[in-house]
Structure formats: structure tokens, C-alpha cells
Length: 158
Image 1 (tube, rainbow, N blue to C red):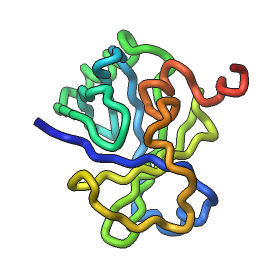
Image 2 (image 1 turned 30 degrees about the vertical axis):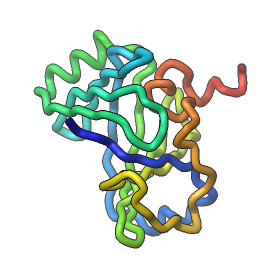
Image 3 (image 1 turned 90 degrees about the vertical axis):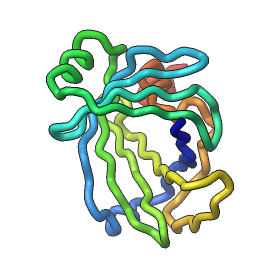
Image 4 (image 1 turned 45 degrees about the vertical axis):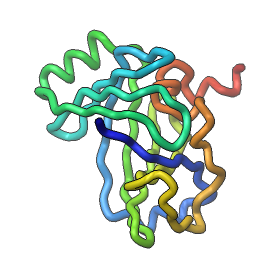
């Protein structure tokens, strides 16, 4: 069983941009988002994956990921997934002994930037860069499956 241990944060300023080691564009969509789990398809460049995650809120949850053919993923994204799709650029920033993944969203989630850090074990300590803002790990709104159903650009309308 695979366990994902992750913390999510908002960003205070743009100083992290000077520390980017590389970036990748992602397109992902959700086939299912239930109280117990979510199932998504993700494309990055010429690779694609099917991902299943438990819906546990907090720093750790079950995660299973399988590479699938790119053509299948493209068809699933455009024919079967809930719209809008999640469109983002993931920027990788090395800080101290960890790599931060900073997701800059586009489309219906434009304007949202979230930093994530994946850890090797529950309770592992990590240094927080000066550009890091408020932790949102426990805020459901910032989970990608919820952003597909309730896009960031629509939050002010509620």
C-alpha cells in the first residue's frame, strides 16, 4: 500500500520563482470524487497516469498510481472526466533537503498558487521557506478534486 504524506500551503510572495529548478505542465480530470476516494487521470508531456486516492483529509492518505497510454488518457480527459479540467504548471523548488512542488493554476482556477511538500514519514520535520504562507492542508477547498467541482475563480460568488 502506498501512502502519500503531504502538506499544502498558500504563497506569500513571488520570491520562490527565482529558485525554480524546472517546471512541467499538467492537465488532469476526475472520473469520480466520492466521500471515500477520488479517481483521476493526469497528463504531463508525453506521459499519463491513472491515480486513485483515499479521501482522508489531513497530511497522509492512501495513493495508487499507474501509467496508462497517452491516447487513452487524452480520450478519458475529454470524454469522461468532470469539467472543468484542472490545468496547472508545477514548478519544482529545492529548499533545504526537500523539493517543493508549487502548482500555479490556470483556466477556471486561475490566480491560485499552492505549494506542496511530500514527506517520507509522518511527523518528518521540514524547513519552511520565507515565501511560504498559511497552511491549507486541512482545508478541503484546496484539494484538486474539489477545485474541479468548485473552481477558485467562482469562490467569490458564494
